[in-house]
Length: 469
Image (tube, rainbow, N blue to C red; front, side, top):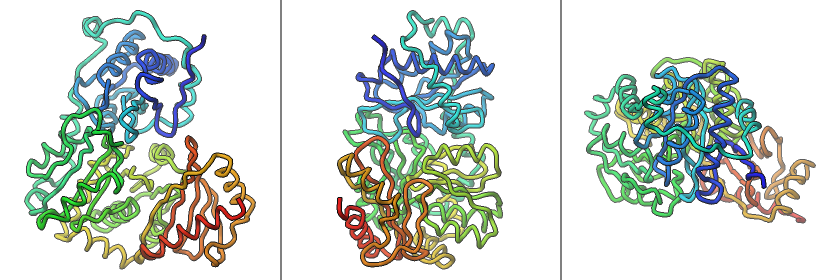
């Protein structure tokens, strides 16, 4: 009987531990990666794992497979973030990186992400090539780690220290530390915990210990998962900024001093504003389809070229390998900037925002007001519609056929369909619909002038989408 088919999703292969995510299946994916590397004459790989259950076992298994094919392995025995592996690939001049992580998925999952020599996600066409050669069966006996060590096929490295050194060299940490700024940090039991503890010993830390069960909570840095952080900030007079990261610390969640969530749209605008106006950096701006159109407005004010891609950070990373990109990002918290690796990095982005606050002496709220003065105020929200598969696709057919021409009695001015459908009621007010590829869910996004308008638009949108279905 053949083994189960292994498919890479938007960000690596993910599966439930002990069901499909097994040692044998990790061997199969590692073998395919190793064989693909050999075809490309690649000779070395960096391997890391985050705080999830079984991370060490699965990463050691991968190391044994790569060693079996005479590929040199750089391995960290302790948990690390995804950006640490990506940076390690660059610093060690390795050909590839492997991260054993399921990122922000629930605790029952683990995963396998591939990173390329430029220090970012492997491009979709290369992933497809690896996927195509995943063998039916897993390898038998593999060399032990001791044997790999004797054959100089494994070298133990400290990726966290490498990352810390890179941070120290890239930020004015003294300015941040001496600014009187007080940080609250929610590690979500993820791989960012040690770095923040080391950088800011006085920070208020939440869930910053090793707990592979994540206390039953998917480590996704969105507001409904971060109410404890929000309440901590609200109950304090001294905390200026709240930061959270997902399980592998490549995504960011951000809070202002009032304990209000600051979404990725606002963070992207702040990054563009700081890097262009204060740092005088240039470059292209890359956003995914669900990001605020205010980014286009601000880029135009600065005379910078902007590109819009389908949803998924891999599309941004691919452009970053070819073009000079200043800021790139997606609505779900994956953001990247010039001067670092071609990778989203939640800690790095948090440090940029903190440096911006320290340099200007302004609160996060005041900096956002500065941005609003340039592009106007707005709010954004997303509401997932849990719906039967047949209804989900019936709604998508209605979108495709042009049946959605009014929402809440207001006519749709124009529609865009790069990745899902975006219905504009005005230049600044839109509703977007996109089907989940993996579950019976429709993602519905709304962008409007204030929170009440967003709520109304979501409500009207749900009605308009389901009319007659």
